[in-house]
Length: 476
Picture 1: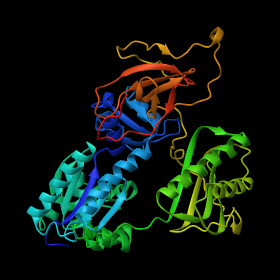
Picture 2 (picture 1 turned 180 degrees about the horizontal axis):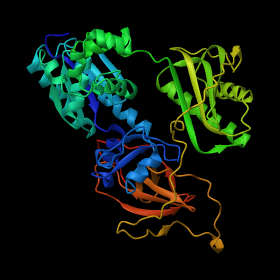
Picture 3 (picture 1 turned 90 degrees about the vertical axis):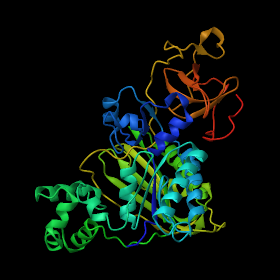
Picture 4 (picture 1 turned 90 degrees about the horizontal axis):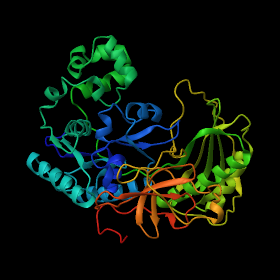
C-alpha cells in the first residue's frame, strides 16, 4: 500500500454508447443501446439515458427492447472504438510508462513511475488534466479514481461516475469501504454475494467484523484471506505494463440457426478474414487456427490445426478453417460460429500455404444450462417504417427502374453502420427492411441531420469508414 494516492484508474463513461452519441448528433441526450441486434443478441453498453429504464450491459437485447422500446439500437463499430481507445491510451502513456489496460475503455496508471505525481495535490492535478485532455481530444468524458492501491482506485472511479474524479486519501480506506455493498469488492460475484447475504453479511464493514477465520470457513482459505484483506483496504498489486495478447478471435451469433452447408462455409470464410484483420491490427501472426461451432442444442465444439509456423495470410487461415469445418457435423443447425488464432508471434513464416504440421481436434462438449450464447454482430436491424425529419414518412429516393420493377435486394444495411451518398455525403443507417434503407445524414460536430430513404441497392449509396469524433467535418 502506498502512502500517496498515485495509482490512477480511468474508466470511460458508457464508452460505446457515448461514442455513438458523439458521432451521431441526433442521438445526444437520448437512450442509446449498443450490441447484437438479433433476438439472440445482448447489450454491450447502454447510455445513461437508457439505464434509467433499467437497461444494462449483458442484458438480452429482447429484454432491453421491452424496457426501452423507443431507444436507438445500434451495432457496435469496433473500428471506431479502437481508434478512440488508441487516442486515450496514448494520453495515458504520456503520463507514465506503467499503463495496464483492462479493456478498450479502462486502464490503471502508475503516476509515480511517470514522475508526474508524488502526493495528493499533484495526483489530483494529473487526474484533472487527463480528464480535460480526453474531453478535448475525443469529446468524451471519463471518470478517474485515485488511491494508494489498484482496488481502491477502481472503487473510486466507480463512485465518481459519470464524468467525475474521486481521490481516496490513504488512511481513510476502511471508513470509505465500510458502508459499501460486498459486491463492490473484486471477486465477489452474484453467487458469493448471495452466500454472504444468507450469512447476514451485506456490507464491507460486516465482512471485517466477521473476521478472517470466519470468512475462510465460509468461502475457503484462498478466497477468504483475499476477501478479508480487500475488506480491510489492503491491496499491494503493482500496475503491470500491457501484456502480450495470447490469442485473437471473432465470432457471430445468428438470429436463426444456419442449416445450409454452403452458407455455413461462407460465414466461416468471412470470419476468417475478420480474424486476420484483427490479427494484423495487433501486429501479430499466429500458428494455430481454431474453429468454434455452437450447434442448435447449445453443444459447443472446437477444432484446431497447428501450422508449421506463424502466419497472417488470410488465404492460409481461410483454408485451415475450411478444413476444420469439414470435421464438424452441422446437420441439426448452427447458432454460433467463431474463428481464432493462437500461438501468437511477432513475425510471419511465409512458406506455409495452409500445410499443417500437427492437426489437432479438441472436442468441448459443453451444454449451456442457462441463457443463449452471447450476441455477436451477425444480427440485422428489424424492418422499421422510415421516419422523416418532420416526423412523417421519408420519401423514397433513387432512380426508378423501367416499368417500376423491383429487383430482390442484394445488400444488407445494419442499424448504426456508416454510409456515404454521392449527393448527400456521410450518414448512418437508421433502419432497413422491405427493400428500403433509411439514412440520417449527419456527422460529428454537425447539427442533427435530415432523414432520407433509398432502395437497398441504390448505386449512389455505399458503406463508409467512420469519421473521427473531433476534427474538421468532412465535406458533404
